Length: 312
Image 1 (cartoon, helix red, strand yellow):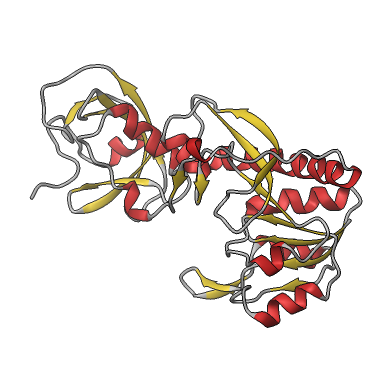
Image 2 (tube, one colour):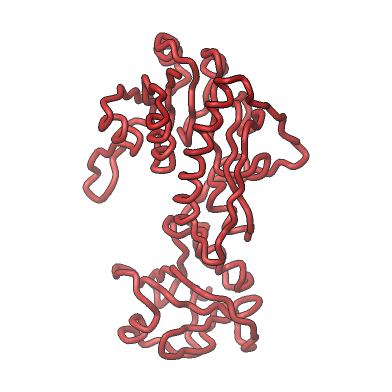
């Protein structure tokens, strides 16, 4: 099929490559404009743009896809279908209905659960044991279109937002190829979502990673994994930020105030939470590299009774 592909981040790239490998023709790659990033504010193009350029495919980067001239330009491409994978803008009806087969979206959850932004991170943070990928025929709602295919993925006990991101991107690529084959041969089944079962999740913001030690150790451990690699979980210590990259849950109650270091051993730092102890295994002091707790303790004088989080 002749495809207009719309996507932006790394998550989109495996589907882009899989469609080409399956013999489809991507006639146009639509992605977000280049943005200034990093300390030097150098302009950086999206992973989808980089992939398209490597394959010699035309790239289109409108600031607002809803503008009439953008819609007209897409219509001129005479595509059979639009494939959308984490593009980053809401599509108007004119684009949704401009091709014979409409717009198909690859979404990183088992819809109708986790509609909206950041479904991957929230699945880890909320302690889901199973998530997956859905392909759907897009409509004007937010992830409300008819479901075409789904595939479940079981989360590992140590799953992070980053590891799940990578796994689901590969699953989504294969599922999209399978979906387009079903659409093309007429065997695709379109199943309306049950709105009563829908949940919506919002964007992940940096402040979400600020650990509230009054929460349970289990909740904090999931938050740490869900926010790895971005934006990361962190706490305050001696007026600076200490990022927490890996932790474990331990039953017990030291009787100390949440946020208080209950025990320090050679390679572990146990902190009292609202319910249980959180054992810090990998941390990153402000301005330093990530390190195991034993390496951290060799350079920083931390002891039982110290407090994380700051006091008013």
